[in-house]
Image (cartoon, rainbow, N blue to C red; front, side, top):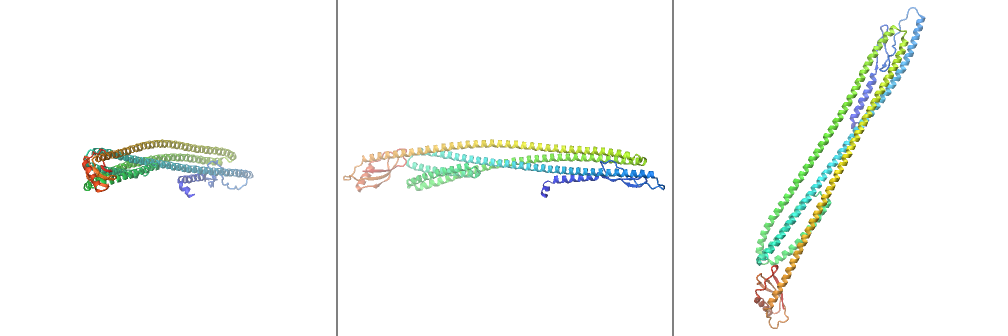
Length: 573
């Protein structure tokens, strides 16, 4: 009970005020008047209601005469009996009117309690509607924040894709540059060729560094876009896996190339160390540049996120201010309506009070008049009493009708207010439904647009991935074809040298059936570099004839331009 009173203090105070007013009206409807008797003595007048007609005044009996008069005594006795009968009737009528007034007061109290309860229910309903509206607005704000977070994640993913595409383009450009440099270095001497090979290896390492920088940028973007959807995370994971596999493949190729270069660069170790130092410095510079680019991308993303957050906070603040203004306007309107209603009630009470005072004055004047008539004309007392009773009855009927009319008007006014409140409630509910439908339509449009944008981005990513795979496959085919062409050219060149040397070889007698396997390096001008290595040979004379044949055969046939490895293995038999 106390919780209900605390939740609706206004209704509780209004009910107390209405009960007090009803009790006050019930009390002030009685008056006690003292009138003078015919002999100057004070005799009490019976308590009368406002709606009661003027009753007969009870006067003190006149002093007894010295000589008894039977006629006067009989008349006095008859008058006394008539007076008592009238008093009994008036008393019964008064009790009936009091019962009616009590019933009406109880009815008014019940109506006041009903109005107070209706007011409390209305306020509770308004509070519930307000809470529901605030909950809907908070849910809308949460959806807006989630949508903004999703947009930020998409922007971060887009930035990561752009960084990856940029790194891919840079790697492709570097690969093209490497191929051009290799073609240019094929025309130089053997020393220049070795240097070009070292530079190619360094370019490969630079490409790996660029790949590492791209991965660092992708990791930074993934850190910003960690709230993205699982589909984006799955794509990023697949992409990272493909990148790891590609990196492993490149590392294997680099390891093979490095082993090959170590075999070739055994004689030029000091020079290679110097070149490695220069390459390391260059690599450090490129790493610093990649870190600077990644830091710039990170700062740009942070600025964009801060701008988006400030925009969201500003919109939320504007929405809260708008709701506060609407709530203040509603409260002001409610207070104005309540003040108007209280003012109207006060005006009606003032009118009723003025009417009551005027009526009391009229009643007092009538009492004075009847007292004078009672003193002047005792014989007409019965007739006047009958007339006054009739007038009182008519007055009571008129007052009862007036009260009934006022009660009916009050009931109709209450019903009109209830109907108005119900219509206002229905209007607000309809507006809320329309607003909810509009929000749902807008959200559906936004979701459709977001889905279309996601599909477009996904299609672009697939096209870019397919293009990258096609380019990688073409490059692999090109490298394989170049390797096959180089092997074919090397085999053809070795066969030419073998024929060229055998034409100038004179095996010693008795060496038939002997076989020798020779390893040698040939310069671009056709001369043998270093010493001839015999992997397999018979007697020393057989080996000396082979060494002599190679010396007479110089210069050997020149190597093809596309052959980089000029170490040959020739079988002499």
